[in-house]
Every structure is written in C-alpha cells, then in structure tokens.
Image (cartoon, rainbow, N blue to C red; front, side, top):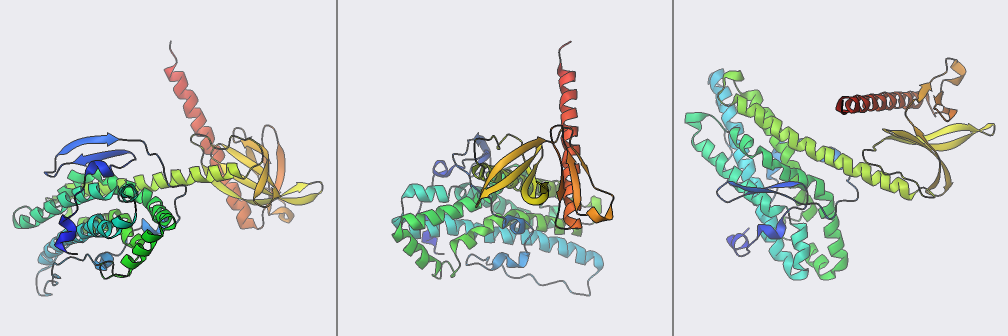
Length: 415
C-alpha cells in the first residue's frame, strides 16, 4: 500500500458512526470524548452459522497471510543453554512483542479497508453506500492506533516495567466496537452483494480489485474476516501470556487476569447478540410459515428445539412438527409445502412428560398439560431421550422463572 493511499483520503468519524449500542469515542490523544448511543435502523436478518467457527481462536500463525503484513523481523528463539528462568522471561517478552506485531498487522488491514479499498471503489458507487459498508472502520482505526502506540511504548519500557496487559485493561470498554463488527459482518457482506447487483460498474471494479496485487487475489469478504477474528486472537494471546507469567508475583499478573476477562466479555457479548438476532429471525420465519394470525414473536421467547414426531391420530401415526420454546410447545401440522397449521400452543406451566416402562414402546413418550394429553413417538430411543431431556429442562426452568417473578412481586408489593 502506498503512502498516498493512506493520506489522500480524509475521513470524518461522524460519517461512519456506528448505529448500534453504546459506542465509545476516542480522540487522537487517547482521551474519551463521550459514549454515544443510537438505535440501529437495520440489522442482519439472519446470523450465519459460520460464526460458530469464526469465534473460536484462530491460529496466530495466520495473522500475517495478508498483503498488510508486519515489517518486524522474526525473533529468534532463545538458546537451549540459557536457564529455565531466562527462557520463561524471554517467552513472556516474545508474546508481548507478538501482541504489538499482530496489532501492527491489524492496523495495516484497517488502513487497507479505510483507504485502499475505498479509493479503488468510490468512483463506481454512491458515497453513502460506502459509508454504510465501512462505518465501523474509522473508529476501529482510532482504537487500533492508540493500542498500537501503547504496545510500542510498553516494549520500549520492558526492561524497567515488564508490563503490557494494562493496555487491554485501559481499552477493554472499547472492545465492544469489535463485537458490533462481528455482529454486523454478515450484514456488511450482504451490502456488498446488494451493491454488486444494483451497480454493474461497481461489480466489475470489485472483481478487478480482488484480482489485483493490492488485494492479493483474496475476496474483500475474506479480508473483512480479520475484524471478526481479532477478539479471538486477543484472547489467545492473553491466555498464552498469562500462562507464561511466573505466578501471581509477576508485576503484570493482575492486569493480565483483568485483560483476559475484558476480552472474554467482549466475545461473549458478540455471541449473545448473534444468538438473540438469530432466534428473532427464526421466530419471524416461523410466523410467516403458519396460516392465520398468531402471536409467535414475543419478548424473551427463545426456540430451544424443533423436530418432527409421530402422533397417534385416528388410530394411525401421523407426522407432526413440534417446536419447543422457553415458555411453550408449538404443535403444528403440515398443510402444504413449507406452510403449517398451528394446532396448539401449549404452555409449559403444569406440563409433565413421561416415558413408558414397557420395552415395546421405548420410542414413545407422553405429554400431559392442563388442556391436552397425547402420546408421541420418536424415530429412535436416542431422539426420544433428547426430547425428554429438553422438555424436562424447559419445564423446570420456566417454573423457576415464574416462581422468582412471583416472589419479587410479593417483595415489591406496598405494605
């Protein structure tokens, strides 16, 4: 990437402000301006299952397989003749330096998206479209530049202080920006697809750009995965760093524990948000597939399990679709391809499930509610036991939540 790519284009944070959650604002000198909150005007309709793999820590060796690799020289391993204590100290330093070098690689990735990509594609699409697509990158660059600067300072002072984890503690509250990036990664990919369909010139330019040396013949979507993988990389580095310290007496031990906790919470936040959005999309999809007007989407409702079971109907077994939620069990009948009739919405309140003791009926189990009772048959003993376990757990947890709610109401009731 040429220097002109990183200097010829000016950016305004206001043009790229994130549209979800509480977004920390960091000035160039590292001080906090404010925390802005804005409601999202759109979110990804469905979170891809790919995140189950992406949010696991990637191999750190992969962090330099890009056109924006670091210029730092590889650090040679310590001699086998040095003492064990020296080896441990050297290992701690090597991991600390890896934190800095990986941050430098990520800084180059951010600049690649903020400048090189924008400059190459801006003539072929409306500016607002690129602003929307790249809205997370300017703030990530500010955050990344500050972290990189602090990492470099810690390494320069290493012989005096032996500390670096405090950088993660300092910027821990702002790692939510990465969480929002993770949550909206699928949406950003969809935006690229939509722009390619709407603007043929953009599609052609994007194809040429992805085949260029600057892009190293890697798709832009694959480059953007670097932002998804950053939190898992932080977590892996901190786990290795913490494991290499000489116990609690090390001057960086307490901050390393706090740093790992901050990074883990950022990852958990992203995971929970994606689960919530995916569940909401599933409920909406279910509502669209049911004839008639039914209130399927409710605040707090979560789909736990779904599948086809056989139910005795008119003296023969008929397939029925059952969807278990955290507050009810939906019992549906297929009417036509992809469309269902909702027979019953059965509350988990007072529901009981039983398995027969007779060996001839090992695939069957019974459901008893305040309004309906029926016997179902699974395709195998394993499937039956999974349903029994899921139902029993959902019933128990629903009862516990209800009891807690009643107790809280009693406590808060005025005397």
